Length: 368
Image (tube, rainbow, N blue to C red; front, side, top):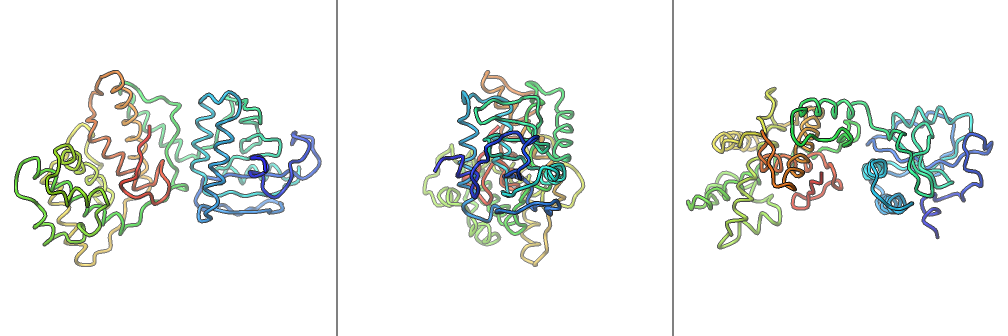
């Protein structure tokens, strides 16, 4: 079976590609990035629907991404990149037939769903059915891929905040997730991650300082954190002679811990600047307070999702600047690479950004 037929699924491609003149119902495959699909409030015949809870959707999307990336000369243009990013974020796939006169109503629905369309002629279309990519791999760079309004506003805010940064993050970098797209980690998962990071970051520091191990203290006061360590963290804690490089890496986890403590805090103050290394004693005091509250059955809550995504968008662009500068063996004024890197790692874990949902801590990626 051809890739095109596998993508289309339940219907053979129709002969005509022009949705403007074809009087037959149009077969539409819609790929939406929102977590909760809006009601299909336009006339249609539903052929199939699935979301990320269906195990075969990931394989299907991999096939579709392969199709998009292989068309034409395969060069990574801006539009191909943005389309690839969209497909990576898809959480709902719907196949349906729609009459010509109902296409405008479908487009209004697609704007709410943040969807792109795949048509039987092999093209990928915008919400208004303008062509983004032909079956032959021709991309129309002037057409706009969909991003939800709050994501676009978030990008604009970040770019404004980073206007003086050099190298400057390009305006063409996509936004991060919108509120309607994000899957935040559960509050208990965040609390457990805080307590585990406390263990390894503390042990990293005492190893570098050639001081007594922090493990007896953790066993007495933070047994939950020890129990919830990741596999790499367990190996570090269990090592008879931990190497200095790993200890340095683990000591930097104070910066990731700082982000997650901020995410659990109701304090209205923003996170400290990425030009400053967090104070270890302050982190110790804050984490001990979390341990105390957790032991008493306190109900924690995360900050508003918008605040978390604001920080994610800003940090992602800061990390881009740091990596670009590093290629030229330069630094970025006002940013400490280790601080930004750890923040990006923790935020990608917290929001599942750029990673499969529920990727474990050790497997988190931070592409820029």
